[in-house]
Length: 133
Image (cartoon, rainbow, N blue to C red; front, side, top):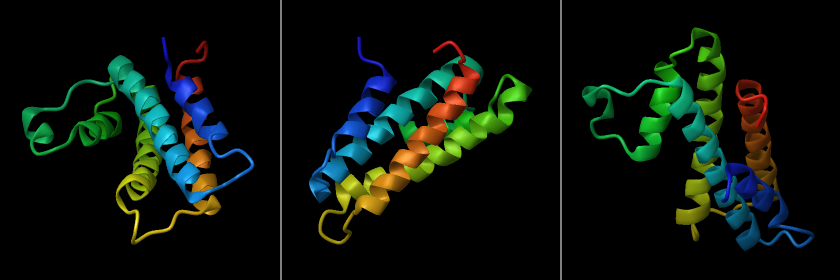
C-alpha cells in the first residue's frame, strides 16, 4: 500500500542532480499530493463536515482546507490544523503553476525549495498531531 510519505520521498528525489524544469514541476506535483493526503487524514480524524452552504460551489480540495480551517473537533488542534491548511494552499498554488502554466511561467530551483519547505513544514505538523506515524 502506498502512503503520503511515499509521495513525499519521491518528490524529494525526483530532481536529483539534474534540476530540469520538467523534473521540478513533477516534484512539486508529488509534493502537493503528499500534502493533500496528510491533510485528508487530519481532516478525517479531527474535523467535522462542512455545511451544505459552505460546501456549495467548492472543489474537493477547497472543501478539505475549509474543514481544516474551521471544523476542528479538538480545540487544542485548531492552530495546527489551520496552519496545515495554509501551507497546503500555498503548495497547491505552486502545483497549479506546475501543471497548468507551462508557457507563461517558468519554475525554478527556488520554487522547488519553497515547495519542499512547505512539505516539510506540513510533515512536522502532521507528526505532532499523529506522533506514532
